[in-house]
Image (cartoon, rainbow, N blue to C red; front, side, top):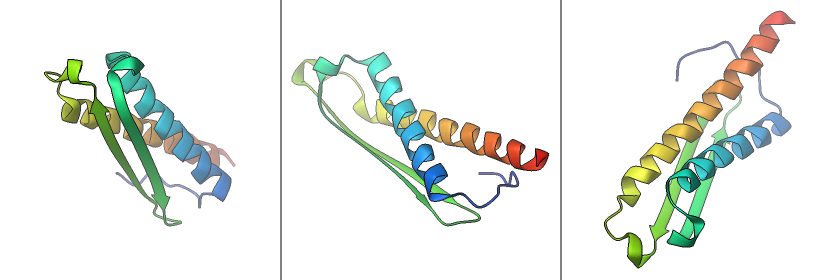
Length: 101
């Protein structure tokens, strides 16, 4: 991720970041497959460090047998991208606000 001039994140901002990223990944997955077709779904978002921060997103998805021809790995990669985009957007908003102060 490029340097965007972030202030140090508060614990509340880190928590909000995790929530937004998880939500973006979940919404993407559910826009592609029905919740009935998902056997298990685990989304883990970790934000570490103060400045710079490190963000990681892990998605484990198992689809029902009816979805055997669906590429769950590709779906997971796409959802991870959506989560990282949500993280980037949030961080840019924070950086923009801190520049104005």
